Length: 152
Image 1 (cartoon, rainbow, N blue to C red):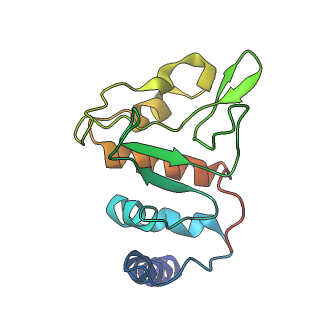
Image 2: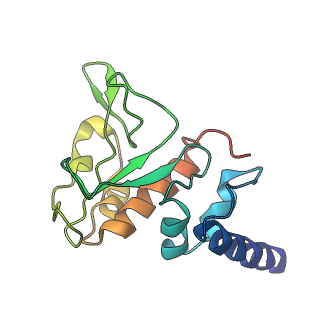
C-alpha cells in the first residue's frame, strides 16, 4: 500500500508539471493515471495533453457540446468520441459530455441509450450535474477498458 501511495504522489507531481505545458507523458501504463483526483486528471487531459490517445476537448465555439471525450478508436463516423454506440452494426459516437454547469448548458446525457451497452452504474457516473466530473468518469472508464491505446 505504501508503494502505491508513494507512486501516486510522484504521479500527482508529474501531472502538475504536465499541466504547466512542459512535456507529454512517458508512462508505460495508462492505469497509472487512475490514482489522480478528478481535478488533476481533468487538467492532465485538456489543453492538448493526452493519456495515450485519450483526451478531453473543450469546444467553447460552434458545436453542440462544450466538452468531448476522445479515445483511440475511430468509429464508422470517423470520430474518436468515447464511448461508442452500436447503430445498425456501426460503432459511432462523438463523446459529447453532459455538462449543465458549464457554458452551453448541455443537460442531455446520451449514454442511457441501450446501444451503448453500459451498466446503469456507469451511466450514472457519466451523467451527473457536473460536466468536468462526467468527462473524467468517461476517461477513467476508457482507461480501465484499454481504449486509450498505448501509453508511452
